[in-house]
Image (spheres, rainbow, N blue to C red):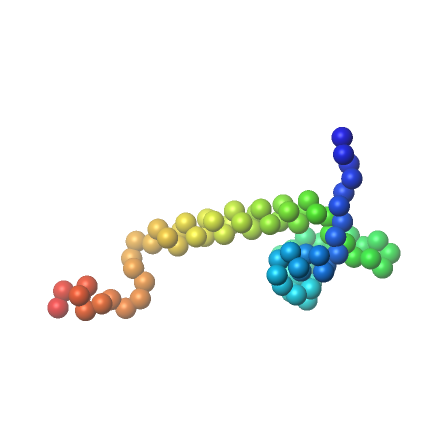
Length: 85
């Protein structure tokens, strides 16, 4: 049984997600990103916690996408050919 937990810093996740470290700090402050672990002056995140967060965001995005695709009325201004004029 492997009980080793991988810890990564903010730069690692910023590179993984293609954003700035500041964006991750803002997400943490807003409660939208997993809270870090502080070890002395070091700030690290557990890899499995962030992976679970990514999975939950992906599932929520898929639900939002499916709801957007199944709209019953078309968006935008109707075309002249659609008006029946």
